Amino acid sequence: MVRLRVTAAALAVPAGPWPTLLAPLGLTAIVGTGLVTIPGELGNAVRDFAVYGGCWIIGFAHHDGMLKKIPRYVSVSCAFLVMAFGLWWASNHLGSSGWDLNDIPMANAAWSFGFVVILLQYSPSWSELPGRLANWDKMVTLSNNRAVTIYLWHNMLIMATFPSSTCSTASRSCRARRRRPP
Image (cartoon, rainbow, N blue to C red):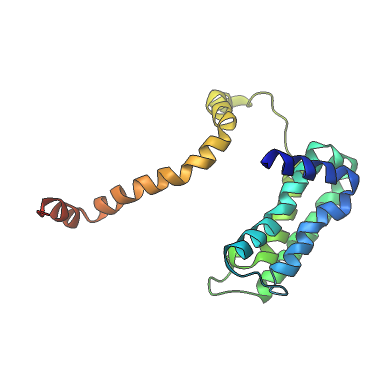
């Protein structure tokens, strides 16, 4: 099922590159600004997809070599303009958390989109890590090969360490709870 979605998105980029690249930003403008409200978890999922979908599609464009066709100065200049728009939007829509872009979907989408474009334009293609970083090559290769596994299991590891960190900060109360008879 996931493979089908990835293939559909990969095919959409070459077929209609500009509408495909800008569609997630347009969806964010509709859903993330409150113009259309979708309640519950479905609404959160649609909003998150809209916010980060542009970065996902930019990755397909980079993979297909479409970003290389655009002169670097043009793409970076446009990326900075999109990021500036994101900051402007955030400055006019500050939430209770202040400048936390996670609370401002349109600003988050614009900033992330521009930032990813710049990173992909200047991304090095290293067959091996340079200089002093070469000692880390095996560890980086291992984590890259296991990225999905790490992503899927990291929340479980965080949750597994939560009780132990609570007990270490409040060791007296943890020991007292352990000693009490049931």
